[in-house]
Amino acid sequence: MAGQEALFQQGLELLTKLTDGKVYLCKAAGSTITGTANVVTEEFSGPHPAGNAGTHIHFLDPVSQKKTVWSIGYQDVVAVAKLFTTGHLSVERVVALAGPQVEKPSLVRTRLGADLNELTAGKLRTGKNRVISGSVWKGFAANGPLAYLSRYANQISVLLEGDKREFMGWVVPGTEKFSVLNMFASKLNPAKRFNFTTTTNGSERAMVPVGQFEELMPLDILPTQLMRALVTGDIVLAMQLGCLELDEEDVALCSFACTGKYEYGPILRDNLTRIEKEA
Image (cartoon, rainbow, N blue to C red):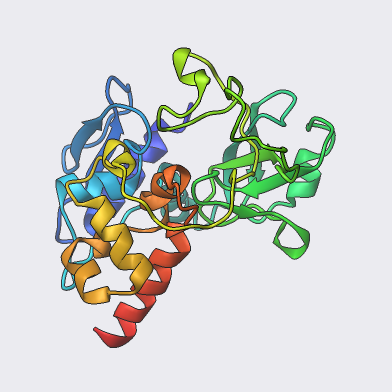
């Protein structure tokens, strides 16, 4: 955003002309980014998912089956301003190249659809790596024809493939293992940082409600009951519990913390597709 503050404000003002509703600028608490007179500025603080659009919408202007709210990223706001002021569509992106397998995490100036094989060449640590177009919460594995910077990606993540099985790993104290629950000795050092891999540390099993979702979900919903409704395909109950306010990124932490190893993002999408067709 450095050097593009004026374009950002122009883009915000243009957005107010495209809607009869309110336009919100959601930013981190204490951020120096400013809006315009016609834009409502709101601040959010705290860890992920404080920066998710779904979190902002939930608290500022909740959606429903008959109400739609649109969100737009800050780089697209600048692109809107460039389109209206120059007549050219800007596809430039500044993305973060990060992850435990990146030698020197950095910001990279590139374009939408860029070849991620070229962008990451010579910048990764040795090993069997998984390059992700986007964040680990919502991105996809960038392999073969999918090795490109996706439309809404603001980062490129790289993790080591966790395809090595550990013999009787559940017996060891787990000083090098992360756990949301107090299952491993690593919890004795809450400041410890971990190099995560792609391993799920186990296979899919029964979903057991032990309260981990409630610890991670900032939205005013019943996450355990909602996740169970999604898994069972009960779209009526899922709608009553608030699934229409969510997308894949909003339930990513639930997937991360799930003892049953469920991927709630794709499950949510399947249910939303059914609702679109049937409800």
